[in-house]
Length: 200
Length: 200
DNA sequence: GACCCATCTTTACAGTGTAAACTAGGCTGG
DNA sequence: CCAGCCTAGTTTACACTGTAAAGATGGGTC
Image (cartoon, rainbow over all chains, first blue to last red; front, side, top):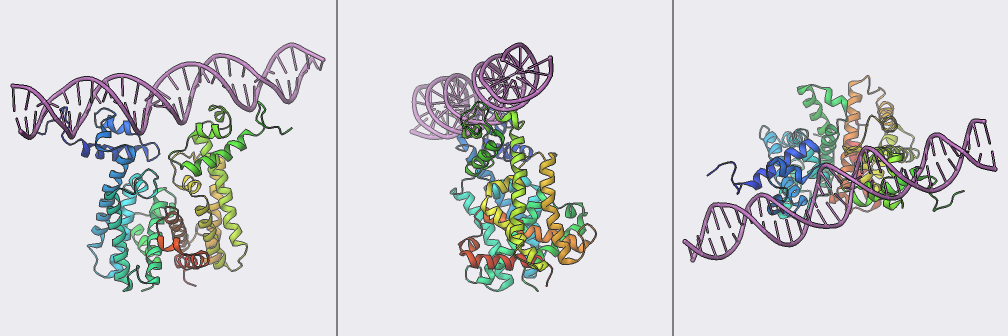
């Protein structure tokens, strides 16, 4: 049965994750409240503890799930491209897409001290994203970052550029970029991200 | 008289700022506690309210002061260079210097929702940093970002790269860079930041 | 049909930020 | 010189937070 007002919620875990993301988006990481999440889900404030040990546990699970969607956003962009360079840049645009669409979640994933990085799920999800980055570098450069010094430089360079763009756009900083309308902004971002890659 | 245990603290405002930075560095933005700061300063938990309206006020003042030192870190690096390109890159290295030296403060300044950006001091301090960036772009490109489209692109590009590097290094992410020892890291950073600039 | 146990609630406690009332004491005006 | 004011601090109070422990509920299994 999928009734709504039962004692046993049915799938409280999923519901809590959903509400946690809403709470996060609304209040930000710093004002995130576990009790607030419980209230949203219409459940007692101690209920979350049963599914996630504590606030860190909930946020960690949320971040892990976030990394999955983060990866998907990059792959979605990449699917439309074939050449290594085009695919690399596309993944960067997907990276930025996600950050702009889910700023608070993005910040949680990359800049929060409340995550438990010993958690296997989070670690694995994060690792998959990093692996994609490595694969993209290798496809472009012809050498794996783990082996080649220049490839390592490319990896850091591309990552930093895309991450920096995301971070700045989230904080509403580069007014120059924000004010551009859709297509022009896309073109500007392509140009900028391209700079971080080795020349064609 | 500069005695220590008086009722009137002498310069509680400065002391609170000092202790607030310590608290921030130790606990991070998310676990920052106003009462903790008061305790560090050896003063009642409500004392800070008299100098800074509330937590946001204290953090805002701290960030404003931080932006001053942030600017100084960039100028210190620039002083050793003469050519526009060298000076631009140097400012970027100063940017990174500061972020690595004061990670929590840096995060507060750029990614905290607890700052009051209507505060004149904060606004002015932030503006001065932004002005330096603009001046560096103009010196290199020969056109002001406010006028020229390409200069605007350069500004965003350079800023994003340097900011992304800072953010990634703070979160201990690019192991590749962190493991390099002093001079090699410096060289790698120069190379990467250079990519974000228009070609020589 | 009785029991067990995962799931949720209640209750309790220490800690947080902020507001209001209270007090100490340096400074100024007469 | 001293009365009083007003700034700088304290005390008290309240609503809220996260977490722990104990109590209730009801679905599933023997």
